[in-house]
Length: 364
Image 1: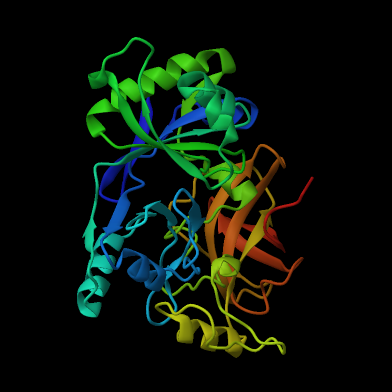
Image 2: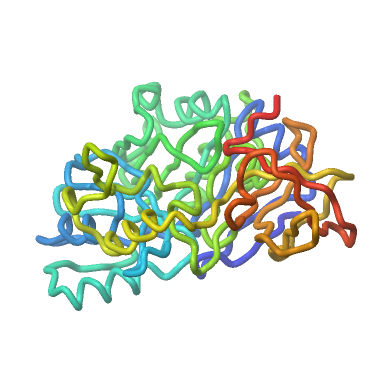
């Protein structure tokens, strides 16, 4: 049985009845995930590069064709709008491979207000992920040994056709070395939704000798590896620094470490400079929580100081198979995010002791 939710107005399978088997496949072999909900916002036209660079807080001015970069988007107050992967498909076409928010509407609004010569659309593109230590073996068996030469965050356009197959059997793909796990793997961007079953069957058959298992984006593993879940780990006021992804924001500094206006311009830059200068921001940090394995976290939970004062929220929670501990992600006020700070949180109707730890987790 498969569980599902709606994400980006699209059905996302989120797990089976055997989460332990899903985790084993991901960490020991390979896992196949339907991530068609990872919608693409396509920006194409004479001003596509200029608009994409302005939208993204990471500097994409030198982004070559065939390269992807993790590139957060902010609003004019520096708050996260989304944290997509930006891909330069050709000289005048970019994709923003987005998390769960309406970036299509945001990009269209900015383009219209700015008079950019672009077309902003949602193309017929449906990603599928192969993740895990045997992911390269699976994809190589399905598509060819050439995929092993693709470097991390690089991609290749490929029309796959079985040996002896006709042109109508061709499966148009963008094959990218990327994915939402710490195990590594590929995302295959299918550019014809009618070929979805054909692609799935091809990969399933190729992956059988390597222990390929069905699954979905894995919450325990991504918390262990600390991969941000926009909208889950964040709230509507969170900025990139608070979310732990500030290193992917291109704010220039001078020799004294002060922020300058040099470098590329983007929406929210001045606000982010002011936020950093204030030094009063929250932080997303790791949390190790005592007690029995917890139930799934349905909504954020308040975190208290030892004296019982609210100091932040628990945003994500899981039992870690790797660390054999209850681990979570907490958005905390200063100074409560400092390492080894003792806190308390209500989990499964009981108050539990919790201790902060830096991200990514290092509890081995």
